[in-house]
Image (tube, rainbow, N blue to C red; front, side):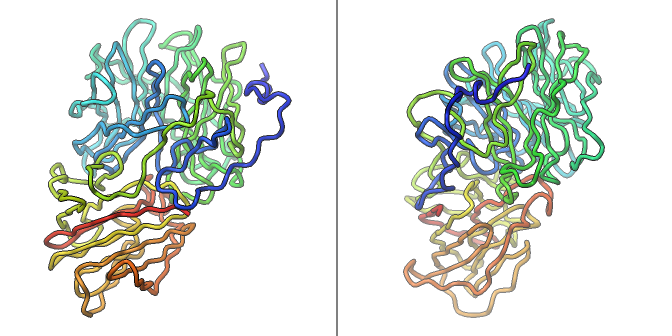
Length: 517
């Protein structure tokens, strides 16, 4: 059945949707807001690096989390009452088990579960953690013994048994408590194939999500590769009258795909369907903002409609225009401020360590409004910087930094241990970080306390420093960083503001000020 998009959205007879508002207001200090306050919203609903969204409805609330990769604490849970305005609550994962990929949040018989893949240089596996309530506390990770698969999707069959659907069209049955497998991995689905001449990264069937609607089990799968060409990633669907198949390909595949690099969102995919306020249905997915791979894959929301023959269709087009809000409720709280006076502990909500050791939090302490960070390693590459996610194209950061003798510390934009940029100092001079390399400090007298400023203006980075926050000196090197992303350095990450301390002793940070412009 064909669907008229404007009628399904309640826009029949309405004027053409207005263009999205400006990217960010002057002085903005948190996640850019999707809710425009006029009954519409613009994407992304959660800006910055929020890939592989997984979402669960719990009464009149919705809970969502994302891949956290090498950031710990990880798997930060977000809550919303309208699907557009989201606030962070708690990080579910504290014990480092590797880079965390594509989680699955689910609730079963009153208990909450998070299934996810994690990998290190020597080990890969699927894990599960569980809790009585989404706010936690969450359990320690339990290994499932599935090293050859990623992207678990939880399902309960008509037989009452629990299953994990896996990458590549495979599936494994779970024990009743959901904490162990109950049988071998089996191949159950051969995903739909796109035409050979389409420009994609790779086939890579992954991210299976299972939904029961009407008389059918629906499987939503990502294919085409999650990065690479902007036209690669896509969403396909299949359905079956039984959890055991056979699975029928949707005649409208692919249901979502970036068809041109001129669209506002690249590599759209990895979708989950959810019932929203008032019984309308929605799809969360991720995508790269056009020309801004450095921001990572951001969380997108799109309405869908069920057809008379129980298939579904997306209604948001390219997501270039604002869309009607899921509910008419007033604009609610969203995100969090990214400036930090360090008066309270925001580890796990705003801040996370990159690739930490199990005892990494012992490096941190607070006194008054000062954050003490013990030095580690010799450069940012092995110092496990303290990072946060920024979702703006243009912003500046300032922070007061004081160092011990033997410490090098400063302010970065950090992608991974191989690729970062920024400025540090060590009491003997400044240290410039560029391309993940260090320019040796000039031997000159330097104070052990500086105010540092980093400005990211549409992927052009400028650096300033000051002894007092009043008289500023601009570093004579400016950097263009649009290539600091996955297609250059792998790892599926984003370019994040970061604090680091290397060498011996500690660095003391005060009054971090974030401003989007």
